[in-house]
Image (cartoon, rainbow, N blue to C red; front, side, top):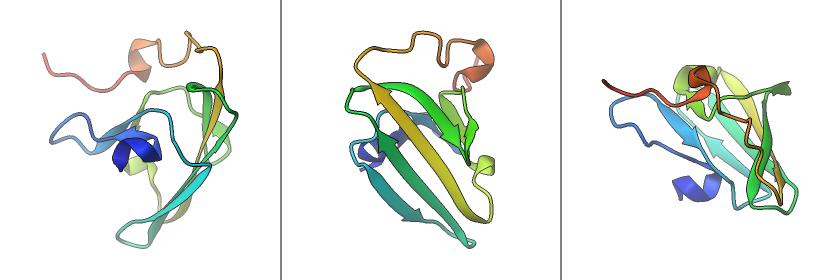
Length: 99
């Protein structure tokens, strides 16, 4: 189910998710503490071309839990038939890793 929503908790013990490709046009996830996450997608391609978080561009391929604020957070994916090879390429835009 996680992956079908477009994200996955890939780093155990760390509060956040790796972003992927959502399978649904729109899904609403009700979280604890009065938080709601609305995930939406447009475009028919398999590849994520861009992501916005509450309407602002979001370049990272990692979404920490603290980005989900009280109330409703909007996570919008725009998909395309071709990959965006620049998205998530910067080291700061990658998931955390342990050395």
